[in-house]
Image (cartoon, rainbow, N blue to C red):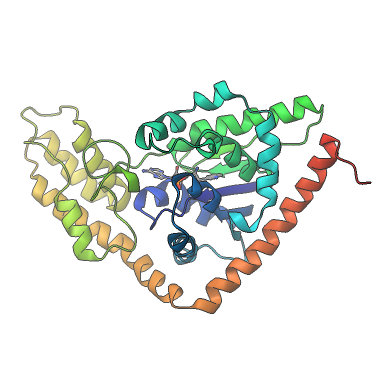
Length: 331
Ligand code: TYM
């Protein structure tokens, strides 16, 4: 049995990228492994949410975890800030994380481009906080999307460095995981890049989106004037729509439109109509469950309380041992 850790930042509602990159793995892994799935609210402070937004966003992800099928009896579901032991480990790891390596991190470079007015130390040390999340439970597997690969590499670096520094074999080497093996990047609808909340209006399909909203977004997805010769490679925007179809539609549907493309008979309007129908039926069951679970105040609070207790038990043990390794002694 492996120990599994992963988290999602509470920046809004979950989209299909979160699902295929992370959540779908959480659901299957909870049956076989010792799993900790959390809501990364410390991480979200790097972009300065207002106190009024923070709690609602955290609650929404917890509700969506449950609606997606995470079972609090099987996996530990918790809120990151309910386990301040994480922040303590983050402090220790920061002592052995070097400016140069943190500055070279791709997500840091992206962020300073996106928010040049707010280049805070939390952004720089984002990878050490993420390493703390993973190492606090001494995890070996971390289900994430492709964009988190470099963070996992840094987690291994920090864990190994700690082991070397104190001459122990305490932290295992956690590996990024996806059950299709290759880590995935789900594209968005605006032609380039990944599906994500910060990638522009209409780019992401959320589980809470009503059918009409999904239809509108999909029909607006970027396409081109179509292939002029058979069997040509697809341009990025077209490739993206096909990739989305691959994850939500049946193989027959995908193959039909692929064949249409290769024989220059494709009509993107038809393809998008079909994609919208398939996305609506894919998201439908979860949309209904989100509404039902969200209305059950007592259940949601109970899940968070139980999760906090279980996660703290594991985290407190690690912190006790780490303090001993570092050389802190009780008087
Ligand atoms: P976040 O909140 O940006 O995204 C949550 C998870 O969803 C995946 N994801 C995607 N996968 C494929 N295609 C996409 N378009 C797509 N968009 C998002 C992400 O890869 C991620 O797995 N730093 C993390 C949160 C975090 C964490 C951790 C994860 C904090 N501590 C410890 C694992 C372990 C983040 O910002 O993910």
